[in-house]
Length: 271
Image (cartoon, rainbow, N blue to C red; front, top):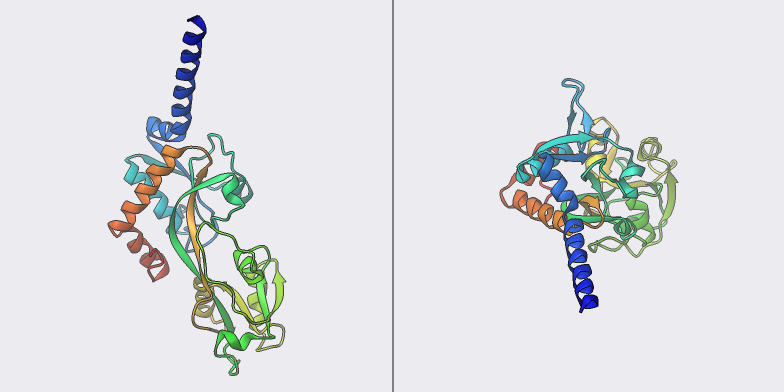
């Protein structure tokens, strides 16, 4: 009888411990009435320091604030390093990361992704003088500039593994030229058609921003693929994940995400 009683008590304690863990982060957020959100500073129009106000601004910043409003709590923004954010095990440093993060299978080992909140169009751009390149199929045998270790490179290599499927790369042979950053690839393409590169593969809004600055580029249609970008949380809090998923669904339903996307991107990338 004593053994049975002890066993039941242990089971009861285990249930309570499980319930506490399942909502630990959510309980912490609601108890202090503040959502601590991590954003990636220095990437306009996603997140950047506004030179006029001296405060963080951008799409991800506004989405973080909108989620906090939906939860009926305040918000505190922090800018940890990207390596810290994607490594997980955040402890109490921040509660959520709204950093335009690609929900890859590798990252899902240490992070949970409650919801995709927008999708980034990735496209090929060529020099405006490349009259013989009008379609993606015309890139066969051409040199394509890519950012090293970026999603575009993984897609190009056919190794991009995400929480939702994306379009497959074209069945043509292209020559990959890898750069540490997109800026250097853009500089090489602007030198002229075929001089160092024939095309670059990058986020369409980034290419459009370069064109607006005077880069002599032309986008190819259609877009290569749409990269899902998700909010991230530390792994393990099921209740927090469900609550955030519902918050994002509500923000999509009431048009908040669309309004913010139009404000910062000039297009609705949230559907």
